[in-house]
Length: 209
Ligand SMILES: [Zn+2]
Image (cartoon, rainbow, N blue to C red; front, side, top):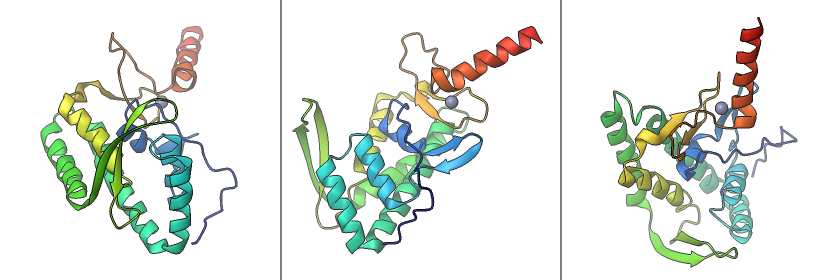
């Protein structure tokens, strides 16, 4: 498998969206004004799934081995997840605006397309930490069901009707999205210590200037 080892220190993942599907959207990130795809290779996508708690270390290792044996399958899985991410980004950006209905319909078509192809078994399991998680065990293609937990997370947002909580970070040039789960519905920043602090510093400078 061609391992793009071009970046010796791969960018870390930001899991601050509050929903798995928003965390996937945020893998297409902006760091110091530069657009960074933090899941630019299949191995990185596996690492993201592991970091997000979607798969465990054993599964991650098995997937990485399988990707070496079947590079085309891994490449196809990466194309699939990027396509899903584009649909989910549109949902995050426009799922609650003037064109919400059209955007939601287009996203639903994409989610249902993926679901219609996913052949497997659903389970509920207890993790080592004592949490309960839904699992999708694919039949056949090992890469087939990888996006299902992400699709299910988006489905949950549809079913709950919570698109009025989905916001873009108010930070300048920050493209991250999150679910505002604060009681007061006043969350404005992806991270207080990042975009939030920069905005505060800017306001301070403006007052002094
Ligand atoms: Zn931000």
